[in-house]
View: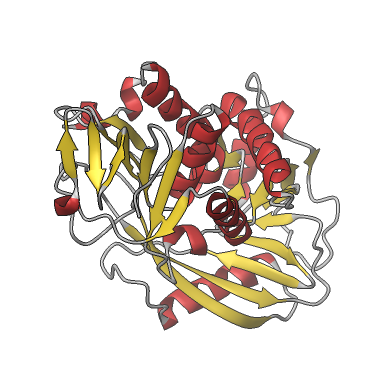
Length: 349
């Protein structure tokens, strides 16, 4: 059956990137059609979904935090109203220091302009169940229930005739003067949001992928507070009802979706470095992250085919920076607004 809406944009992939872009286009009144293979395991479905303002051993503010953080919150709250779902949960993050060097780094960073606004408390106000002998600090944070977000978005798209299960193969695309034809339907533009695949997309095969496999565990842990996210070289995030998600790992050689014993052991070590409470593993998942060289997403139009576009590589910070970047791409596709060079896919040829 042919697609009947006017000038729809075809989005290939309903992971985090494709879903964010669909919402931004819909918000501006643009018709879309999202096509997804509905793979059981994807990096978006396995992702922790955590928004962490201050990260790493050097305790740096996440890239463009002051801009991305409020933008993301407003966007997810809007999606919640559209789907009548709770999706975005604001939770403080208790960062536990690994060693005295991190404490010294914190003492240095706290003096920098704009840093203290992301520190709610110094120290560890509630250390019940935590291994907090080296101290820490509390920062604002949040997590997006990724599976709920993807399912709620798919339901909305399906109910508005803007979603279908399928696979858009590059060889099945016909580029015309007036648009893109696929399966007998005409679309104004097409955006690839496929994540990482073993077979590179021939239209964007120059994108410098550095994919990394990541593993996560779901656990139950009686007595551990569900009012906060815990972070020390890994994370423990509450899911409700005594359940938590914990991770994660990075593996650059074995690029598949198979959980491993070594990954399980690494995450267990991370958990045991944060809490001395007993826990039970209830699930173990793995997927390949679509990491791009430079660890920043790339987006924009194909340099030779203006009707083809790209949005990929959100990585571990995607829940935070994805809303802003997807809005940037939506503005570019609809209004021709410029894309910053640092994230423009055409600048990475």
